[in-house]
Amino acid sequence: MTSARPRILIEVCVDSVASAVAAERGGADRIELCGSLIEGGVTPSAGLIETVRAAVSLPMHVMVRPRAGDFCYEPEEFEIMRRDIATAKKLGANGLVFGILTPDGRIDCERTRQLVELSRPLSVTFHRAFDMTADLLVALDDVCSIGVARVLTSGGEPSSLQGRQKIAQLIQKSQDRVVIMAGGGIKPANARSLAEDTGAKEIHVGLRSLVSSPMIHRNPIVWMGALEGREYQRFVVLEENVRKLRDALDGPE
Image 1: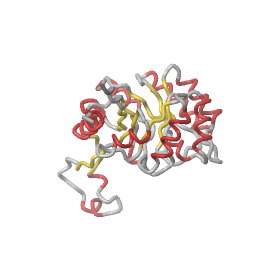
Image 2: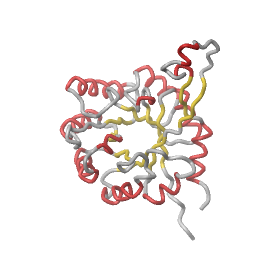
Image 3: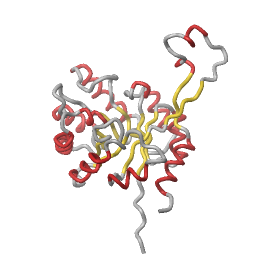
């Protein structure tokens, strides 16, 4: 008799109430709540955190990122992160997501450790700033020493499919000191093979779909201009796509 395949945890990245609800209904296990995913994700507003918390019962991990761009922050930005952590905890976050690097491409252990301590008792995910470090294996030892619960990584590549060998290496080297969560380019068609190839027990997905605005009136100058129509479209997570991913991971051998 063969043992059952271990269930892979699905974390869905969302930046709206509708996407959070769709993720829950589709079978996700956790959401990462961000603001402005079109910029790569920043700290969500207090209003968004509070409204999503009321709308879904899934564990909610909140992004703490004061701006888009690099992950080397000024003292004032670090203070913003400290305050945003306190706000997210107060509003019902189950975990925090952040990362800080030094100019030479290493984990900023001192300041990251301060934020980890401030986040307790909530768990912390070190996000894909990890992939921007100069040496992923050195960075792994650094984040383990800081006390984060998990690391989100694509193996230092544009997608986790390209970085699957490095992800497998990181999982082996971690020796259960930290969860290695694979993320980047994961879809229903490739999720199971990626999990099997890497040994990842958690995956992080966007699954974003482009939807058109309900606006009837559209300014033709803006529509055809530099914004390229972005004022009349947005990205959302659809329940059906999350369910397809869940089914792909849980389906028969």
